[in-house]
Length: 288
Image 1 (cartoon, rainbow, N blue to C red):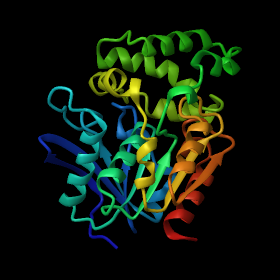
Image 2 (cartoon, helix red, strand yellow; image 1 turned 180 degrees about the vertical axis):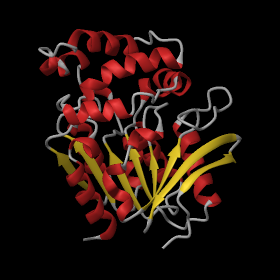
Image 3 (cartoon, rainbow, N blue to C red; image 1 turned 90 degrees about the vertical axis):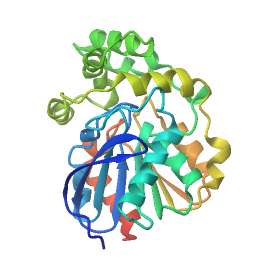
């Protein structure tokens, strides 16, 4: 059990003002959101996971309610160092670490650098490698071509990938359009989630650093064998950005990994299949 009290907190760690939220009760699970640059409030209600775990939702440096880092200090080891600093600050022995999308890349990096600081690892809609596994983006979204919003969203997606944005607000406007492709279907459930999180921005500074300095040569595969803790890999069958092949590549290289494919999800399994997300994570965390 833990003595952490639910609430919103700020702490200065590694020279950065970090914000985090505590909710729920039970074993501690640190949740690292994606982007890079995405708001931790995008986790919404975590599909109810706080019924059986204490969630510490970290707003990554330069994102959400956390302050910016100095210069270009938005590399995977920087984020991993923040997780470790937060763990030490909260006096946690071996929490569970869950990373979503870019946060899953951070979680892998954390497990490489701090192998004795976590008990279990959840890698959710993420990857250890792009290369030939990366989908052709325009081809991948063609299943939405009959939607009235398709052309506007495709234009936004192309602009983001081409780096055609200057401010957080620019990127926020693009994201609200392209986000529709990240679901299996942009149905009422997805629309309600997007409406609820419409104020969430993707901050430009962390995104540019990743796209320019890490993504072109991104390959964590040689280090995956270093991960010794039980690992759950979750992927949506219809996730066009971090696809099933990427999840299978991680499971193949992590010694004690289990794969769960969400057949009716894209990149938002906790929104699209919340019941399954709750059950799968609970079984992994509690062993039942």
